[in-house]
Image 1: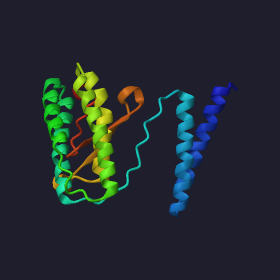
Image 2: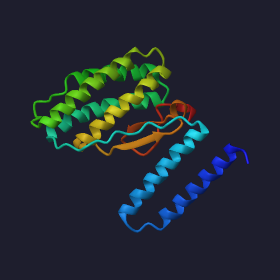
Image 3: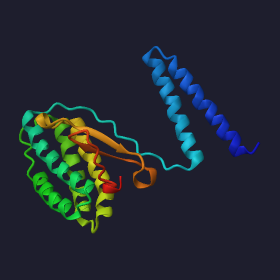
Image 4: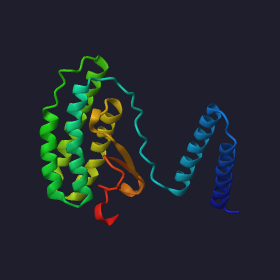
Length: 204
């Protein structure tokens, strides 16, 4: 039997075993063990099939902040949504206009109510990251380039949502497109469940 067929058969058997074990799980410790096995087997399968690795999400710890600071971030969230909707609608110029307003909002976020060292440190880090990604978005000369830079920008918005929250601005939905960027995948965020893919627009 050719080695590639043998490896594929072995992997199929391992994945089938994972399913059987997972079906019989009764304790959380067992679930964690089976999940790690499955994750490792899926990584090996992607390598065998030469599938690009998916980007691993960051682990974000929740930090308590004031309602005032959450309200500041909620304004940034609204600006983000405007850019997301424009990209999903294939409206490059509208996205550029929304980005200009977002940049202005980012520059005026009031941090006076922040009184926690960990919160201040994370915000300064994320603010610098946001400044960088906004600059990249601004430099995009077409919608495809903007979509590419929208991925890291969305990831930073996700950090803000998970670490600080946006107060009364919810709900917040995290969506994932596994096909984006040649199978690397990408996340984005919405305030409703009607899927609007900013990475593909009307082609989806």
